[in-house]
Length: 415
Image (cartoon, rainbow, N blue to C red):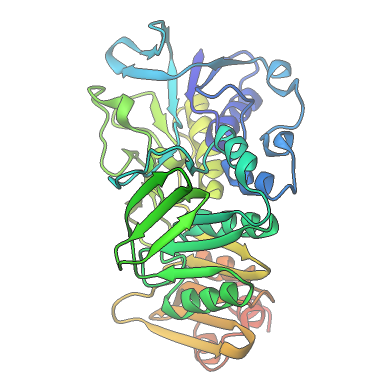
């Protein structure tokens, strides 16, 4: 049995390891287009901050990990998938045949049609090659414009502050991390960063980037002009699905999969940032593009590739945890609430502390917090349990900090 895994990120590596654990005799081929050993993109900002070296970003620390498990690694790009021939085409023209295929091709940074975005000195921060190029230029005192204050942008922000640059962050939305934090939390985070010397501009996109002999100028839609020695873009990502054109695979936002993470083509699965799979909170199908979901997908898809659809994916809980210059922010599930739902809010602006819980009927369905870390870990359990809270809902509405008591009382039945 030959298993081919396209994509050497967290989903792909977890899948290969899982296949080998379940089938000692299978042939496994891991195909990835970058020259380095498989690594975590989420670790790149920590490389910028000099908290780790490049080896610290690798997903498996032993150099012999793949050879010991007889996982063949190909440093190639896949240009086509042909279900009818049970084959994939590589960039150099070769074809590989498979019995089972996992598409875990990840995502690519979004590059909006902004004039000058391809200028020298403008970089995304997605690959180790990107990180090397940025490190060469981020010297203390250099003016840096960071376009995008989403999840990845905020991790990059912290790394840049640690390097002593003069940093300006531009976010088109009305607040920081708009896909994770509500207006209150997003603007508290903005104030926190500004108090630590970072200039944050929200509510304005970038109209264009100009380059001249003195450096780069970022022209904003609000009319402002920023001078910078380096521009870093972090404006989101989109699934790598271009190479699947003509494959017959069902594609929407990403590759559509069923409850077993199998596509509409038998024996072909998808996982991670490219997969449009079940969201636990909504019951719908979405691309979550977060590493915990990718790892979960990789394990489940691989189990089904070996065993023949024995494991059901119940849905991944959308969860984000972010540390920005020492301020922890967290979101779980439907943190934005639902129509007809109720919420409980605790706010202390002076101490940068905010906690909000979202309810639908007797159930906790989502939460968001800033500056609160005590018992936050039980939020995921409360949401996933789908246990009617009963009297504990009333108590949490009055005091949302009673999370551990609510978990013990409602989920575990401890009085």
